[in-house]
Image (cartoon, rainbow, N blue to C red; front, side):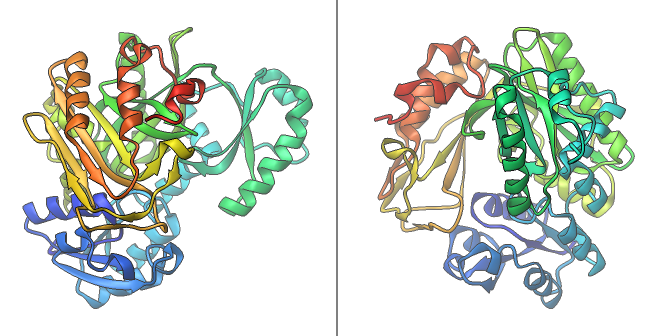
Length: 450
């Protein structure tokens, strides 16, 4: 691989460019007009502007991106996360153009992208799944009987949904049919697929996940993470390994995740996500993300393995550079996603010019960012400015180190979510691992943090 096209922006584009440079791979970044002089653009060897600011005209413009790759002599395309990273149509177009797709093949993306199909694949692989409808809920199906078999509360999920979207809660039978119709209409308009399925709702569940790697022949895991600190189903803070998991549960989710990767003939980096019920000490499959995750740095910190490097090696050579026996775990890592949002105004986006920026430094501290002082935060894209990561010997020392790192961080010109992270880290529920994926919404003083 001599030249890599990066089909993304922000911190993940900077991250990919850094590893590619270390591997001696030239990079080409496709950018929207306002991103032409961004930190990501400065990090790449070459930049091609593919369209104006709106994502459909630039970062989602499949034909323009492939044309840029071919016109500039690229060998491969790395999609990062978000945008086109889990788009099977785009993955096929890349391959059909004679380019290497850095990720699993289109069939695996399609299989795992449809959540009801993914549940069936998980069942076949022996992965524990939540009680739910048997495949997509057909229009003629007696939804009331199906729901009674599952029990309330439950959730209606879009088959093509993901990333916390396409989910509606149902507390009682009175709400069921209207919610299903609403979910079908929403799924059709947002995802282009009206099919939905039903699944048991786990009260006060934790969100845990397993990082897997495969090369189509060998399949391994790189441990687990906890992503339970969420706001409106969007992750806010993550840590690795997942704390306070019974050994049996940890072993089950790790081993069954590897079996799911094997079932798919998986190639590349992927994440298998679970809901963990601490009351019954049971974990059940939610979905598989067929891309690099936002929170991949915490896995890198506790394993010492560069996941982007492995993605590129697998895509180019067809083989991983190590085996399961080579994976060693060390210490504890925490990641805070720092967004340009105003916690005092219901987390409303805070675009604008960053007038000053200062990051902490020291042993165990890592900052992955796509902005710097003088950067403009655009209203057109996700509001994440950076990921602040700490690694320490124990969870307790990692919490202390993160609080100190947040105190040293200075960002001026836009509002940020740093005050919320400080409050979350200081909560006794977080220390005791008694929080859950709906925790933030239940604690009033976390909303409107000063």
